[in-house]
Image 1: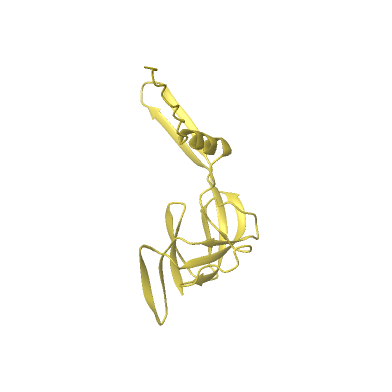
Image 2: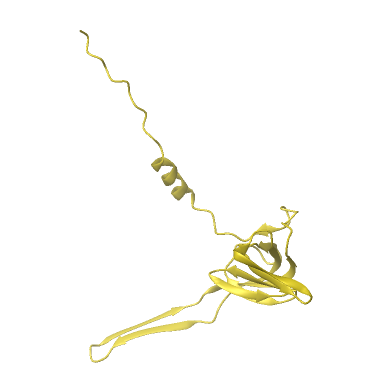
Length: 147
């Protein structure tokens, strides 16, 4: 059985037992996570299910093997004959996952053990700003002139 999952803006074709490196996901080494953005599920002797754009009930269970950084890449910019040279390096943070199982139709039952890989929650200051922006000022009753 195999599945196509999307995480970190990329798509990966995975089978149980595969090891993949994806963009950094929150979690500790040894923790089990659920990848719930499954685009397709198929396998030998099984009908292929394709989502539009994703399968709502399917999920892939994976275990975090390592939190590491990728190979360093060098960004070098220059303009000829102008003395303009800039050198910059970058190392991407990665999470190594081992795919343990693929669940084509069932949602995760034990929420305490399996955590869904999702975007990080906003910082407290951002949530306070958005909460303050949605506050409607109270209207004061208009004074009526005494006639």
